[in-house]
Structure formats: structure tokens, C-alpha cells
Image (cartoon, rainbow, N blue to C red):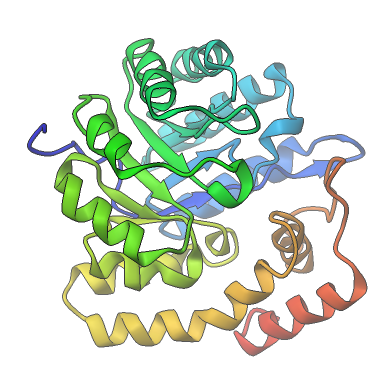
Amino acid sequence: MKPSSPLLFEGCGTALVTPMRGGDIDKTAFTALVTMQIEEGADALIVCGTTGESPTLTDREKHWLFSEAVRVSRASGRRIPVIAGTGSNNTTRAVELSRLAEACGCDGLLVVTPYYNKASECGLVRHYETVADAVNIPLIVYHVPSRTGCKMPLSVCRTLALHPRIVGIKDATGDLSFAAHVALECGDGLPLYAGCDDVIVPLLSVGGRGVISVVSNLIPALVSRLCRLWRDGKAAEAAREQLALLPLCDALFSDVNPIPVKYALSCLGLCADELRLPLTTAEPHTREKIRAAMTAYGLL
């Protein structure tokens, strides 16, 4: 195993929504969201991931989103990494998107496990090694079996931890036993990032290095603070912050992501409540739950 992976980021990485208006990307809103994230303390930006409705975006749109996020980050006084969602169940397609992201200046990649056709252990290893070998920027594995139907075996994690450009795993299982075993088996060779906002502190407690967060679309400063409290050894305070966040997390995952978070952002005037099919806007009862949680957290 390589002794350790250079961290692409530590702390709060925001899985950005893609604002839309009238069927097109709302470019003004996207630029404003990126600027807000940087100014309010996010540690990384994840563009065109699940929360960004990546499956419905064209390559031309992805090119603009990658490039704009990089432009705004580089122009800011606080440059942070831009990580591009480039996963596919077609390895050649994942390579194409990853090369596009690299050409746009992105600092790293987030690559989901192959879905639908899935893969054997050998196929998973070859898929990730093929993508990582095709670029010169680092890659974080995205493990979300509830969406993909593809569960990452620990044996695959051990193998991927050996690759010099595979520098982390976003674990969105919510399964702390799995996360703990990844930490045990792979150590710093495959840094862990929480993929579920309700278990940030528990995952940090078994060696995680941060979170790729949905809720930080709304409150990047607070999610960054939570991670920083843990790093600074203030475990009890971090735990209190995590528990206070749970009702908002529950509300933002009361329907398919990013349906709730887009509605929440619209309540704050940050983007329109618009998604692309097959996603639709939140039902009235979901909206009530989201507004109640936002009000209780002091956002409304």
C-alpha cells in the first residue's frame, strides 16, 4: 500500500446544485452560489455530481460548469479545489468526461461506481484504474450503493488504495462498520469522506477527513465549522453541532436528492425551484417539512 494519499481537500466539500431557469442553466445563480461557497468557508466544490443533476446535463453544459467554477475559484482571494463529477457506467465515457474536466482546469474527480450493468471485483478495479491512468489529476471514488446497486468490496478498496492518483472514497452508505473497515484496511492510502450529512462526526471519529455535503449548499460556514471543531480536538462541541443539524439533514433527504435542497435554496432566494425530468419539484407536505426544519435552524 502507498503510505498515504495527498489530500485533495480536508473538511467540507459542497456537492453543488445546478441552478436552472426556463429549462436552461441559470448561469448568474451558479456563479453566485460558487462565490457564496468560497466566501463562507467551504473547503472544496463538487460540480456535476448527483446533487448537480449530472445525468441530465449535456457535455457543453458540463464544460461551462467546470470552467466557471474553476474561474471563480481562481479569481477569489481564497482558492479552493474544484472537483468534477465524471462517473459513468461506461468506462470510455468516464474517461472522456474526466479528460474534459482536466482540460477545464478542475483539481480532481469524483467518480461513481458503475451502475445498472454494475461490475465484478475485477471490473471495478479495471474501471477505476483505467480512468485514473487516463488523467493527471487525482480521483475520489464515490460509493453509493443505494443508487447504483453496486457495493464496493473491501478487497477492491485495498487494491484501489495502491493507485497513486486514487486519493479517497466518498462513502454514502451510512454504514459506519463499512467505513471503519475501510479505515482499518486502507489507512491513509484511501482517505474517507462522509457522503451522508447525518453521520459526519461519526465518520470523522473512525478516521474520516471530511464530508461531501448536500446541506452545505445552505450553510457552508457551519458544516466547515463542524469539521474544524473535530480536527481541533473539540469532539463534544462537534457532536453537539452534528445533533443540532440532524432535523435539517432529515428534511433535506425526505425526498430524492436534490429535490428538497433545491426547494430550500429557493426559499432563500438563491436559485429557482426547478429541476429536470425525471426529477420533479417537492410535494406540498415535503415543502412544509423543509420550511419547518429551516425555521427551527434559524434559516427562515
